[in-house]
Picture 1 (spheres, one colour):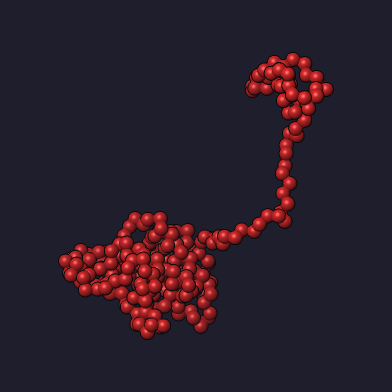
Picture 2 (cartoon, rainbow, N blue to C red):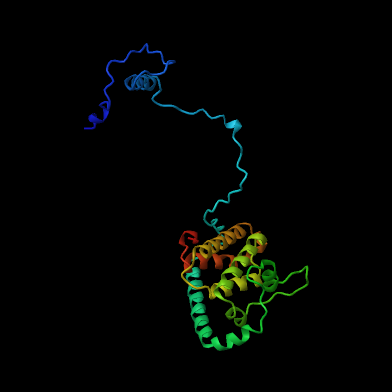
Length: 243
């Protein structure tokens, strides 16, 4: 069917294989003949031979973004427990939304009395929320007054800071857990890609922390299971869900 594609485009006549290729062509036809001869001398398939010993190893560390680690059999939450947590969280978000609307005027007054760090000042926000043993400051428990005074930009950024703390600490302590839960309760939908990626990091970090729990630390599993559950089932990252 495509045999016509094999027909030569230009007629060059008889080709003398003894043409001296070291001499310049004397005509256009002579040039085409030389091209044909050189093409006939090329291999149909050419494979490059690479000396792997000379290749440099990558200098950039690439983090593999897989799913959550499977929960140990004794620490895996039941589907019924996960459904209960999602239902409770849905009620919390609904109630929070109603209260926030009613208290909007109070919020504007209260906002002027709370001194928040600059949104890009990570260290100050970590100290504000969680306290610092070095500076001797005590943690700032998240209350409705504080949560409601945060703009959505602050909510998203502070949530990222708290999730980074989970990654670095490898555990969710009570105060850190309260802040994450409170911020998730006022996080607006739909999620933008950066926030979605951040929540997935939270779920993966919690699954790693859960897999590393010692037998005597089993009481810490509830908060880890909770955040994996909310990210996967409420915020619809179902590929991260516990079975």
